[in-house]
Structures are given as C-alpha cells and as structure tokens.
Length: 289
Image 1 (cartoon, rainbow, N blue to C red):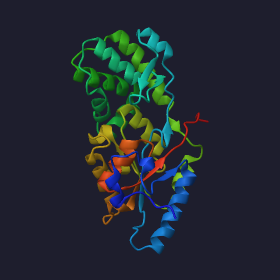
Image 2 (cartoon, rainbow, N blue to C red):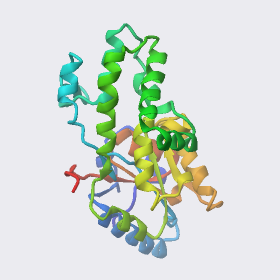
Image 3 (cartoon, rainbow, N blue to C red):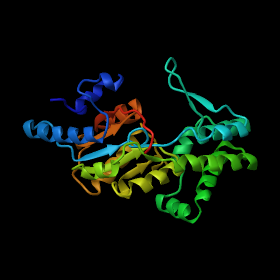
Image 4 (cartoon, helix red, strand yellow):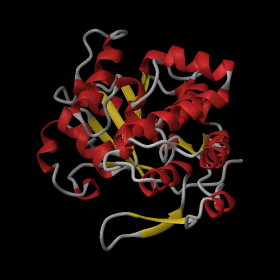
C-alpha cells in the first residue's frame, strides 16, 4: 500500500519531493478522496500510522485558478511587455504579465524599492472582517488600498494615470477567480475530515477565494498570508493552520494533518519540516467552465 510522506520522511527535505520515498501524488479531488480511504485502511492495519483527521489545501494551482491573460492592452498602455519570465535558471518559462507584476515594474520605474515586493504584497492586509466590509461597501477601494500600501512601502507615489489602468486590470483578474475542477464544492463537502486552506495571497485574491470557500471551509480555517502576516514556507503560517484546527480538535497532532498543494517548497518541503504529512497535487490547469 502506498504511504503518505510524513514523520521521519522529512529528512529528505532537500530533494525534489516527487523523488521522496512514499510521496503520494494526486491529480484531482477524487484522488484525494481515494487517498483518505486508503489512509483509513492503513491506520486500521498499522498502529504506527496515525489517522488523518484534517486536510489543508493550498489554493491557486490546487483548488482555484484565475485568468492571467487579461492585461495585454493594459500592459501596452503602461509601456510594459505583456510577458514575464518565471522559474529557476534552466527552467524559465514565459507567462503573461499580471497586474501585480506590472505594479512592481511601475513602482521600480518610478524609483521605488521593490526588493521584497512579493512578501509585502502577500502579508499586508486588513483583518478579514474589515476587508470583507470594505469590499461590500466599495470593492474598488480594496484594490486602491492594495496599490497604495505597496506604493507607500516602495517609497513612491503611483501616478493617477497608472492607477487608472492597474485597478481595472486587477479587478478583471480577481473576477476571473474560480474552481479548477467542476463540482469542487460537493467533492470537498464529501471528504470525511476537517478542512483548512493555507495560501500565499494578496488581499484582493484572498477576498475572492474566501467568497468561494464559505460553503466548504470555516472562515477561521482559511489561513491567508495577507491576514496572518506570514508566508509559506515559514513555520509560522503552518503553526497558524494547526492552531486554528485545534480550536475544533484540541488534541490534533501535526502528523494527523495532510497538506496538499502543487508547489515543491511551499506545499511539500515546508509542511514536511513542520511535521504535517504531504500529498502533491499534479493537475493541469483547465479552463473554468
């Protein structure tokens, strides 16, 4: 029987998790359900295997997606390339420029300091309840506040003309957020364990994700970096996941939590080092139906 990576398997944390002994790979939520069924049988036949009592999902690339290709005309209006290069050396790939990446380039062009742009973007936000109230009162204000926080941190003022392009661009991206897999809500509701999510997200995307998740994951178990001030793979964010789950299961142990995501460091090596068990989500991004 295939076992879930966890416990002392974390000693291989410096390697590609796909080569780690015992790592499970799933491709969809049906695979997650089958994995949990297998884990129940494994725990029943082997006392050394603790039962899985909770699953924590990464969000984008694992459960959710958004349309990155909404800004070709906006990039041109800002005098930027519509493409960006991502990935490690030797594995680079060209992807569409996103609104946040365009914002970073605009701030840098204005002389701003953007060395830790990604961290600031994903850790600066209002408290969730306040952010939701702001979004309901004036959704545009959430996007404007996001731009202002990053411009303030960079030490420059974003020109009004650039704000007028970036805000609707960001709005289009956020409006495109949706489930990767049709039927995700019912599939998640059928899983026989407590659910949590843990994601590195800027606040506009966190609000969109929270709206989709409200039927399946309790608000306290939606751990978004912008609202807890920590990003994966820092231990602090996994500690928040565990503490929030312990609010409903006080005796929950790290090895009883299965973390599922699509990224090597944030969703496999980081959770393993914290003590969670891990399964790797490997699915191709499909168009939202």
